Length: 167
Length: 148
Image 1 (tube, each protein chain N blue to C red):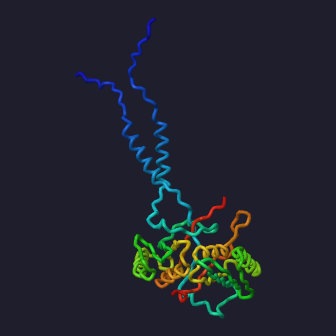
Image 2 (tube, chains in turn red, yellow):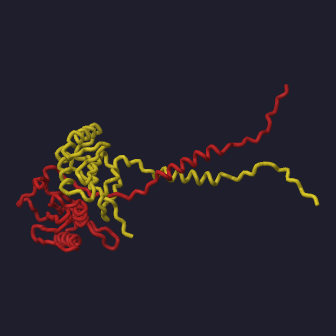
Image 3 (tube, rainbow over the protein chains, first blue to last red):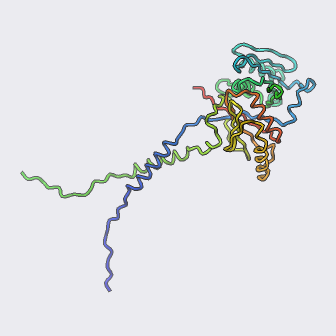
């Protein structure tokens, strides 16, 4: 029996179709690619009961109250700070860095490094103040950048209920 | 003078392998970077910027993303709520969905993406609304400000 030998064909793959698809995929991903800026969070834990703890007898030594006052066009007009022992008011353009200094001084006075975590900041914010100014104040009490490193100050933040200010 | 006739009529084919390799690498690069979380983000909301905000490293067990614009309109889960007061039923629904997944309301992470010009009072009102449903873990989302 004679077996027919298979012919020695050179099998060639047609790459054109695959390259077409690959380039279409590439173009799709390039066109839909969007550089998104990184987002970060300020974490705030606020149970419902916390908003009632604003009476005078509840103001403990480890509570710093920060009042943000609104000016024209929703911009910030001034900051009042009070830690139960000491207080101050800032109206100058450096008010945020002075707020940071006040918080840092309060924590340093208390000595124990763990106090920084225990100390709480309560924000009393005017209703119409633009949110960006509030975030700036939260940033000022949360920490500061020293030689490129972040020094953490306060982690516990809460808001005083200002719903009565709403029209 | 005699010219040598070139009988080699084969089509010249370059080696495509390196080009295909590079192209596949590019596709892989763009596929990895493509962002599928855009559904949760309302692009018209301009977040305030901060240098100290911490980018989330771990995704919470259950999260709710609330987008609040300047006029107090809330965008949440593909729906639009013209007033914060209309959010009750939607928040209750989310709470029930979380409980089915054994996540307690206090452990639900509420991410607030508010426009930088929104009155802070509206943000507080939104927080109060969430508190009424039993939510207490809030994250105020900001854009990372990079100092060059």
